[in-house]
Image 1: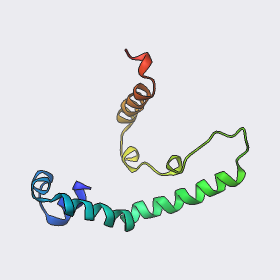
Image 2: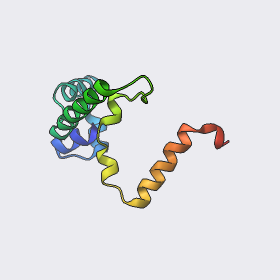
Image 3: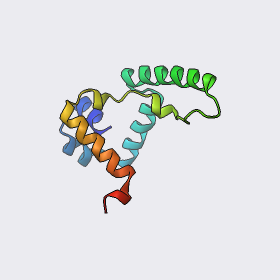
Image 4: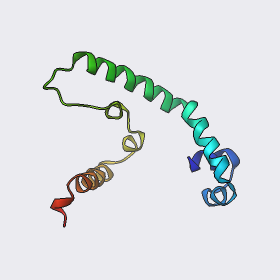
Length: 101
């Protein structure tokens, strides 16, 4: 969110964080929730279609998936293989804290 505000104002993220009031930040969050950026909007539509098809074809033994499971991860798509491997490890570490005491 801070990146969008900084880009729209032509300021650094630090400057925006210093100048933005809590009320303005809340209003921007509400605005972006109602009118997401176009790539996010398209992502939501695609995920909604995929989730609906999944729910129509799901059986009792099917793995329970959520809507978020069908959304594209744009950040991950821009990573190289090494960054993806590190990200996978971090996610595994968070999902299995008992293994990493």
